[in-house]
Amino acid sequence: MNIRMKKIDAIIIVIMIFVAGLVLYRVGIIQKPEKIEIPSIEFNENEDEETITVRSVSGRVYWKDISIEGDCDKTNLGKYIQEGDLITDCVGIINIKHIQTGELLFSYKFSPTPKLPYTIIPGYLRDVSPVDEGVHFDKISIGREWWVYTVIFSEDSELAGWSATIAFMHMAWGDFKLTFKPDILVVTLNDPQGNTYGGMINKQRKELLGILGPSTLDAKSPGVDISYENSWAKGEAPNWHLYVEDEDIDKEYEIILDLDFFAPNSPLWIHSSRLFDKGDGSIAEYAYLGCQVKGSVKIDNEEYEVEGIGHHQHSWSLGITKLAIHGWDWCHMTLDNGWNIYYNKYYLSRETIPTKSSTINPISTFIITTDEGKKITPLEDLEIITKKSDKIFLLMKMPSELSINAKASMSQLLLRTYNINLDIDIKDVEYYDKIWKFPTYLGMKIGMNSVNGKISWSDDDGDHEIELSGLGSIWNMRKF
Image (tube, rainbow, N blue to C red):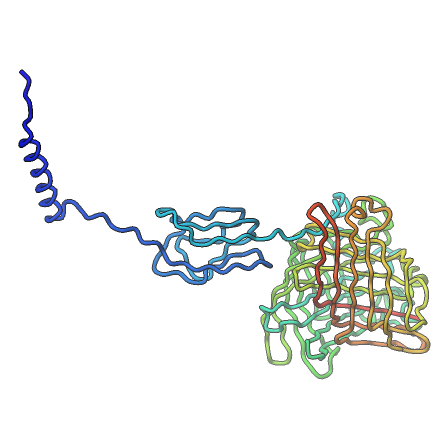
């Protein structure tokens, strides 16, 4: 039997459903749909640092309710959105949306940062063992050995913009002619106002026939394990700890440095008399670039927390090299854009001319790293001009301003295709100098320098030019 619903019956059913729904809503069984609110979040972008920062947020908002689209690093974000939260390594278009509503909260297109071309370095040029870090002057043939640490303190330090240089130096007999004080300790601090603290001292050792004078610089292996009276450095890559007291170096101030050095990347062999197994060379030098430095500096009774970027250099050579080397320039530069440059040059002739252009540099190095030593850009075609000099004694001149033009050499076939061209000026800001006159005729200058210039290159993305500026720790030596 077919039952046909009358029109009035359908109307009654609809009314009953409506009334039932109204009753259920009034008693709270059925809830009124809530309106989804769009969170109020404001962001700031930083093109240079490739970051997005949360400037403000209203109420409690979860990051899981937010979609971040694009190429970026979100690992720094927590559970809740907070002021100061940082999205890093942003490349290209970044869109930030509210997932539930699909509302676009923020959008920005980051221009790609030009990347400086670099060289693929063979593994054996970046391999330094704990034995290589240790002592070499315990061999009769090795006359000189130096462990050098430098740092430029960052803006986050209580000594922002200061530089520090610490060096333990075992010199060769005869370096100071008719003196028996070849062990050197260097402790220097330079501030942006042009003040210098600390200095340099050389003392006796007992290595001559095993009976002459007290021993001052002691070193062991493996790893760095050196001491000079109450000052010492100890550790193995990538970590070293330095505790340095200036002793009687500075007559006016008591200085104590307590610093940790960390090398985030492998070192680079700068020189070696061995083609392979660089650490077995009788002449060798390696450097860690872009070291992260933290610790404290105490000047008299005031203690300062510090951090910055520096470098660690270790070298050794035959004693006879003192007859060939008449000077050197070392410079570690920390640039404002995060790059680091390591420059050195050894002079085989006496530098008696106040200003001099040098285009043939058989023993010179110029290295750029944009990421604390992970990638290396060495430039081997150097033109070095001494623009200003200071007379130290007799006809000897010490540079106070250098101009360097650096390019890829003919042998650097791949780098030459990028047409890299760098021009920088290195100027003294403040320094400590020490001169050994008769009969030594040797001078050293250690201090802070400013760096200004530019670098250009070409790649598939076009032509690039970047202004360069920063500070450096510089060390010059000249002898007659």
